[in-house]
Image (cartoon, rainbow, N blue to C red; front, side, top):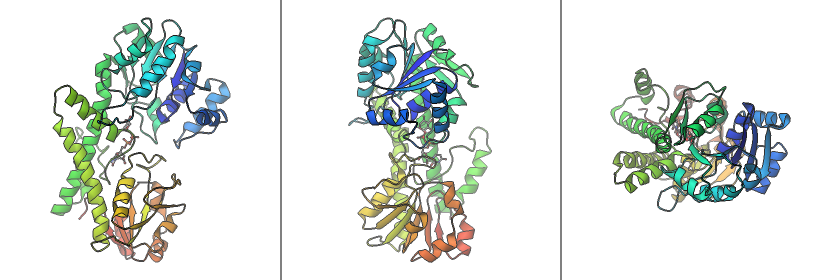
Length: 423
Ligand code: UDX
């Protein structure tokens, strides 16, 4: 089994490292954050990711998974080095490659002969060349192996992916990287680096398009008196469309879609193509934040100035504690700026927020509230005592931005209910 270094222990790096160790490889994970490495060496997992703690502990127990400070220490003895560092949005919308370049510059001098460096971070088309230059090593191949890991199901997505994509000019390097995935039951495709990098962006862009499309269909449903739940059920039976990724909501967010959509628009522009379809997808999403906030304003009687709002959900989606680009922050921020007094609860988020108070109990969020808004689709929200919620609220009014709660049951209990795309 090969020895793999993973640079960056965010949700992609940590999942990649732990899963490769689970598959039987010897893995060394590195990060520049001393506190994170200290935590990991004590067996503490810095992120909320179902199943990750189990395989990290398993890797530590078998000795197949180690954590070290700094990229050089990890890369020095490894045949494969995965780059899993952030590629944040730069000032002009393009992806910022400085972390990738810095990591490549650090490991270049210490890599063993004939090592393979693999880009797993989402990087603009052409980035394998940037890494090659930063490494400064003609004997080291650079390969693209994009991740398709959803937060909240990253371990499962790694071990049972829909496919593995490897982009390499050097076929023997591609075969060596492919060998790391022995035991993973998925089609494996090898292509050139530019195509692999484009596959990643095109997938995220397509999924974001699907979501903006369904949010637009939801707006039409509201206008014509249709029910989007039935509309998407009927659409999903068409095998060319499918049922997945068709749930309307408060808008899409997270650490990938917003950044990658803008980066792809920028990549297209840099190469002379105006990707106006994607610009529309992004602007429909911004409208969706506004439309959702406006539902609360309408339910409150036309203004939220001085109005108490309870919110369930802060994370950008369920089963994660990640609030990056969370629609909940966008929407609650808009309401707070209009004078609303917001108290929010999320099962996985307890850190303080700029625009509103965070409470540690779902009922506390509802105390004295004039409107309750559901922003993240946590399963536990479905099972709360809605009689208690009604009695705690000043007015029993719910805006359900995930169509999560049982509308008829709430209406029977005396709630006013507004969902997304439901007349
Ligand atoms: C995404 C991609 O799915 C993954 O392949 C990629 O590697 C990283 O980016 P992630 O950001 O974890 O994963 O979230 P995802 O589950 O894709 O959801 C993105 C956003 O869309 C969330 O805000 C989510 O709430 C929203 N969403 C998703 C919907 O509103 N409706 C749906 O039906 C699905």
